[in-house]
Amino acid sequence: MSRNDAAPGTGNAPPSRLRRLLSLLYVQCLIGVLAGAATGWLWPSFGADLKPLGDGFIALVRMMIAPVIFCTVVHGIASMGNARAVGRVSLKALIYFEVLTTVAMVIGLVVVNVVQPGSGLHVDPSTLSTEGLPPEATASHESLSAFLLAMIPDTLLSALTGHEILPVLLISVLFGFGLNAAGEAGAGITQGIEKLSRVLFTLIRWIMRLAPIGAFGSMAFTIGNYGLDTLRHLALLVGSFWLTALFFVLVVLGAVMRVNGLRLLPFLRYIKEELLIVLGTSSSEPVLPRLMAKLQHAGASKPVVGITLPAGYSFNLDGTAIYLTMGSVFLAQALGIDLSLTQQLSMLAIMLLTSKGAAGVTGSGFIALAATLSAVPHVPVAALALIFGIDRFMSEARALTSVVGNSVATLAVAKWEGQLDEERAKAVLRGDLPFTAAPEDDHAPEAQAEPTPDANPEDAEEPDPRVAPGADREPVPAAG
Image 1 (cartoon, rainbow, N blue to C red):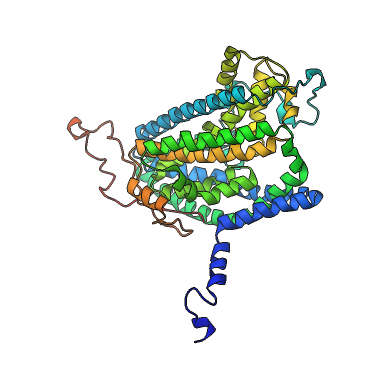
Image 2: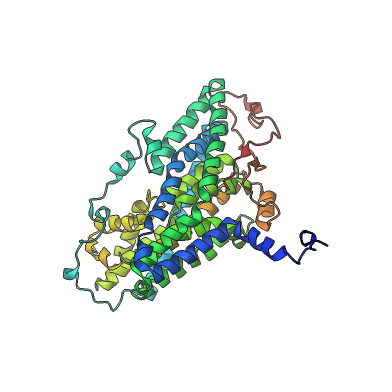
């Protein structure tokens, strides 16, 4: 018998299994994270210089986010039938976002008051300075009206060239409604947008092959620039924040999954590659396009995914919500400021606003905390200098929690809308239907169109004649 004909389990089998293992993206990302941490520890100066590797990868993905969201949201709305279906999905998503964000903040508030990580530091406020903080942290922060006006881009196309998600969502929703109202005139454009989204996901699939390099550079910079010793300072805050975020994911989000007939741990295994990318880059933005494809593959309808997941990146940042309450009360404890329950609740109300629109990029949670402190008189903004050095070690937990939270939110809204193929979702989470890089048919239930306003009353319960009964859904472009 030749070497090439060796029986399974002997000869070339172990190298073959090793090659298959190394070909998996999550294994490559894990190697990148570990290698980056080792490089930053052994050669701090060299590790700090590798920051452009991580920045470059994030920049490549960010340039794709606006067009991917535009194509997905527009095609989703155009295929839903009418505005009532879109409005219902959006309303349910926003209600879910507010409830879960509030729960996350309350949990953070309880933990920081029980653990009291800042007690005993006795920091003199007069010794604090805003020198060395990023300019965004000390800038005057926008009012509610300015925040809402910032959602409106200068032109229809300028939103696609910026880095803000909310303006993209606005023009996508408007354009989707326009195509829906145009009837046959918009049908060809809708098909063209769906085909364009396939091209964009192909580009995303190529870019994601660079994720291990980006994770390596980002982790090497973090350890090389701040050092492992940084974790010893204020370690109680870092540790309690990570444990609180873990509690929120396993208990709160786990309960949401259970209520909707699914299990959290299999779902976490399903998105393990995305979680490792987030851990390495400390940003949730790089995995947005891929998460959209994976959630559709898991049985959620394309319209619900296209509306809920991108909106969650601005309105449902659970990790940032926990960070805001714990960070602000920690700073008050460090300065010896005794915040009453009323003062803490008033800060929580402000945080419900300042946490919105903080995109899932590194440092956005820190800027949101600065916005919170600048809006309340209790804690000086200069106190941010106390946690600026360790903020990077909490940004990973913020991003990881928010990614899981938004993914669970999408599945929950899809279930409540009747737009989740539960049997397919369970099969996917069991591993029976693995996610592949090649486009495939999505068997999630098609969004049901509402009866048109001019329909006869006796026909109100009939399906929209424009939607063929039992028609297969559009194939889903899956990023690899």
